Image (tube, rainbow, N blue to C red; front, side, top):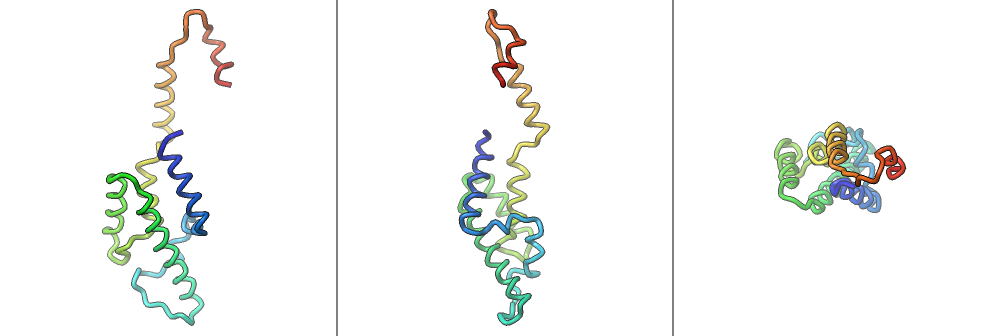
Length: 137
């Protein structure tokens, strides 16, 4: 399994253990206030939900930053943070999608890589290629 795919699975498991999985839902961004520094009223029910979403976003972005292992991926996160002046700490989903877009293999590319690997396989002279299906299954 691709190293990055394993990292994503472990990262998602960590988010779940910290009760941060709502941050992975596409509609999560809609629950955030308009800006990171929006003044929210503690007694307003709608603002309470926005504050909770803001707290989850802060935790999620910090967990993501701490989990990143290469300067290239960290650079993607830093670019996302600089992109939106209303969110200097960043919006988790935007950072997450930026990391995934470049790191997860595209299905078509992955399929071509598998086909290339299959072409490199060499069978001994005493093996029938028709028996290869038995080996795969």
